[in-house]
Length: 212
Image 1 (cartoon, rainbow, N blue to C red):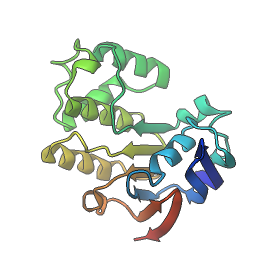
Image 2 (image 1 turned 30 degrees about the horizontal axis):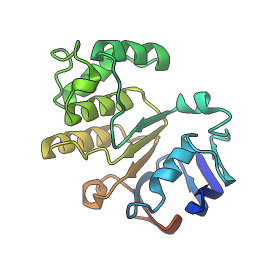
Image 3 (image 1 turned 135 degrees about the vertical axis):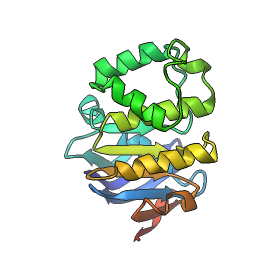
C-alpha cells in the first residue's frame, strides 16, 4: 500500500530523513516509535504529501502523494497529535465532512457515543472551543466513520483519560480488518495488544523493524 524508497528530507543543513526505505502493507498494524527528532513525523508528513522529498520517493497504491494528493487522501484518515484550529461549529464540520469525504454523519455520531462524547449536546459549539479530549474523540470518530484503507494516528491518546483510551482501543479491535493502521506512539504498552509490527527510528533512519 505504501512504499518509501531511499527517502531523504533535509531542512537547510539538517537531515530529518536519511535514505529511508520501508513498505507498509494491508493488515500491518504498526507502532512507529523513537525519540523526539527521530524523523517519525517527517516520514508521516512525506507520506501524506505535506513535504517534498529532497531525494527518493513515496508511493501510495502506486500514486505519488504530491502529484495525486487529493486522490490519495480519499483513502487515508489522519488524526494529528495536536487537533487543528478549526473554527466551524460541530454541526458545520459534520456537514462539511459528509459532503467533502462522503462520510455518514450518523456513523460519526455512533462512534462519538462509543467514545462517550455527547455530540448532540455540543452540536452548535465551535470545534475550537472544545476541550482537548473532546476534540480528540471527535477526530477519532471521524477517522473510523470514514472507513479508510489507511489510518494514521499521531499520539492519538495524548489528550484522553484512561477510560477513553480503553474505549478507543476497543473500537480499533472491532475495526481492524483489511486495513493499514499506523501509530506514532511513545506508549508501546498501550498498543502492544493491537500492533503486529514495531518500527524504531533514530537520527532519521529506521534502526529496527520487527514483526511481533
